[in-house]
Amino acid sequence: MKILVTGASGFIGGHLLRDLLAVGHDVWGTSRDKTRLDLLPEAKRVEINFEKSEGNEELENLLRTEQFDAVAHSAALCASWGSWSHFYRVNTLATVHLFELSARYGVKHFIHLSSPSVLAELSHCHDMGESRVYPKPLNQYALSKQLAEIELLRIAGNHDIRLSIVRPQAVFGKRDPHLMPRLLKLNHSKGIPLINDGAHFIDVTPVENVIEALLVLLASMPETNEIYHVSERSTVDFKNLLEKMFIAYNENVRWKPLALPVASIVANTSERIHKILGLKSEPLLTRYSLSVLAYTRTLDCSKLRQTMGYKAKYSVVEAIENLKVC
Image 1 (cartoon, rainbow, N blue to C red):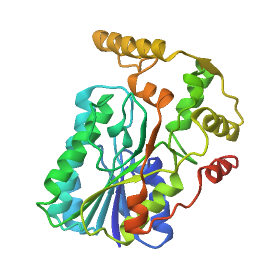
Image 2 (image 1 turned 30 degrees about the vertical axis):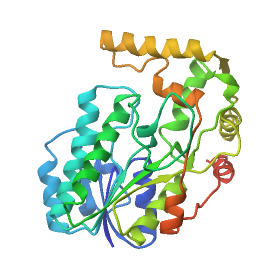
Image 3 (image 1 turned 120 degrees about the vertical axis):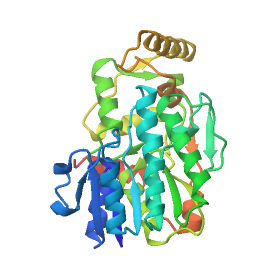
């Protein structure tokens, strides 16, 4: 199978690239810096910056000439704070444009890496299914991902192409540049806020399981356009889960107990001040980070298992153990 992976030098894209090459697929990759795509021959490295429109012509020429069977779109602006125009341009407009180009030039399957942040709320949410109604987004990132999903699903039925939207929650593993590095940085500087004794539950996802889900979708194309949740249920609460993950990094968590009403005031006030002053730095505490630090968010992932035969490669405990050899 001939596959184009966008964001192929990133966390999920990089892991997917390696596994697709390992099983013998004809893989091409895009990155903002093609020198980072050193697993690919020069001819199959494509330098595309989805933040700019200058790469659209090159992207269209690539899709027209190479006739890919599938596109796995993992390129995105992943941040919890930033300008709306930036998020909208990269996560919404560029994604929809890539899908339309893929449909125009005969791609059979388009896989879009989205995020469960589209469902995040400041309330406890248990076993959320893929059909759950979008709540009011907690940040610009979530809004840009919501709009991308809505538009893709709206136009997908007008094209002869299959659309799979994948929402992996709290992905961690080797070469993770986001989740654990941010937590470790926060732990070193101010400590981790501990709200309600961390008794809530948050699903997490070993990166190997995300890749397994993507490989299953690529190998057995779904019959309809669908959204799929991917995560593994944690058997311990947030406090214990985080402590286990920090142990894997030879770190101790510096907990900073914080009452929920106080945390809510801090988050709302910090965001308001940053918006008024136009500050680019992330606030001390945001409403989205509060949704993770104080509220249960678990996903119903049965659709992928029941309809596509997906089986997790690792449990959360096994994946945390694997971190210890990093």
